[in-house]
Length: 435
Image (cartoon, rainbow, N blue to C red; front, side, top):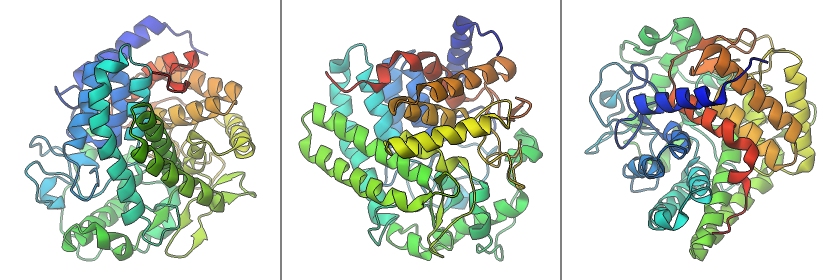
């Protein structure tokens, strides 16, 4: 374990957040991602909370100013013109004053504002801002159940890999083969000019990403139609766990602020999803698996999506099995937790979500394990994460074998997670609301 100067690390992380601050929103990193991304923004707000609480709330408020009327919160908000990123607003074709993408992202906002409020130095000062955000976040949760679970199974699906945030995961490979590439208009990628192409999704994957965007655009971005019209319908257990946690945290905060109706609705949504989640458990794999909704079958892939479920309260037995799985993986890689099974033939230690470590995922797993009493494994993840930073700086993601920083550098949510990791042991964010 590398010796860590926590004061220097805090200052380094704070510096990255300040560099990527655009006043009312942040960018993930200069160049590679020049706009506001949804779950990046909400998780980055947690980092701002250690530096400037007002700025942290502004980050999330800015995002929700671009919520669609139906409740969706888009995964990108194009605040400025910048041709350094593809696909830009001209490809999405969303008709809004400030243009956005047409798909969403993992719903971490409810978790984020509860955490910010719970550990605020003066919660009453942010009460009105929390009260304004709570109905908007609840509307987003309701949208997921209405538009991504139209049959009312309790489990929401994603209809584009970018919605999950795990763009090129092995989990999607078989289902992605159903997505055609014919008719994709010629385009020039920008990501490979900012980062090593070997660390990014392949051209074949990108063609399918763009086909889906063009297909949904042809349907007028009508969210009542997109789920059934998509050849890619995947139920991701990690995504659903995030939704459970966000619904429950929003319900706790709503209760504390006297918003009983919203609290009850979000608890009901969380329970509906929690009741359905065991259908994704694989005893043989010792973890949860993704479901291909088009085929009705579980996907044989031991990826990070099945471990992220511990971010929600999944019960002692399954939390224990996930802790065991993390410890098993720790015997196979120098750093943890890789985004795919390191023993699998399709593991790739540097290509985006097919093996590299992402600190936001480490944070969710560590936080969930800690809440469910698996302190030793949680501490192991935190220690490994901070060690990675000391070795390779604040990168987008990391090779679990060599520790090499991959993708973009000076990354906002990585910096925010460092501040969380330096704080995680004090229990502040895990207390019941008592304000």
